[in-house]
Image (tube, protein in one colour):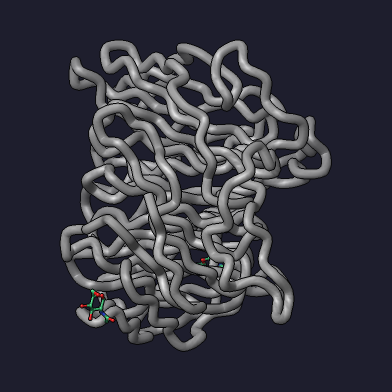
Length: 393
Ligand SMILES: *[C@@H]1O[C@H](CO)[C@@H](O)[C@H](O)[C@H]1NC(C)=O
Ligand SMILES: *[C@@H]1O[C@H](CO)[C@@H](O)[C@H](O)[C@H]1NC(C)=O
């Protein structure tokens, strides 16, 4: 597919149409900006953040939540923005938090649960009034001994906050403690939470992100990607009166059963496709592909941009929906280096990839039937390491 080249700050999209509702994407980056990308035009919004790490969109209420990791200082922050029809983001409120908020999820009755990697904490914020973000509780985690990976497992490091498919529980993969922590959301107020039994991962594996599948029989299956071991673990999920229980079905390398994972690789994102037929993961620091430079106009001043650039990998598996089993189906170029996070559009025809190491957002085409990821159909340079990108739909 031919991609049109536009000046810096523009996102080109050729031979490709999107439904109007999917026209905007929001990208956060370590530059301190949240950028709105129009799929034909990108309009950078004013700097609002220091090192934004995660975006959570309340589409129905047109509010975007962005957390600031606070890498260089002792605090992080959380901001809320009003999204508008013309792609502008209007700051509603910004509050300081403990450092390291890397992922958040809306839950229950106006709650936002925020995982703090550096702060070893889960922070709960009442966002029922997005102009008045109100932290009302938190859980700080500790451990007596460092984990097997001394460098990365010195203390608990919550890396994500996810709502389970029933909306009753918040799950928090903890890279430092080799756990997926689980909390029951109060049925009474829809805000307060109580810890229930955690999912214990294999020692030293470093749980990072999770994604749920609903199987053909209606039961749920959980995929866990672990950054330190570069593995995917699959679990049958059984709901009991005391919480979800997990039965391990398999552990495979992120490149698939019997496949070699390149030395130095670092697993990042994991997502079941919208139709539940495929699972895609991202792996950083592989440089496994060489692809046409999607943003050649954005090279250093006065230097000729390289025609080709190295790219990390997106690995896709087809899912057996009876059992949750994975079969390797494709290894594709991620659109550049450092695919920290990615999202599918609702239709599953596009993937937006946040390429942290390249300061780039790449939109890749995707065949909904085969699950195969195609080339870059649009790309934009976003100053700073891009940490997250989501579709407004
Ligand atoms: C986004 O792109 C569409 C299609 O080119 C254009 O009509 C629209 O005005 C753009 N929106 C903004 C806010 O730039
Ligand atoms: C945790 O919550 C308590 C009580 O709600 C509050 O006093 C404290 O400041 C919070 N700590 C952080 C780091 O947010």
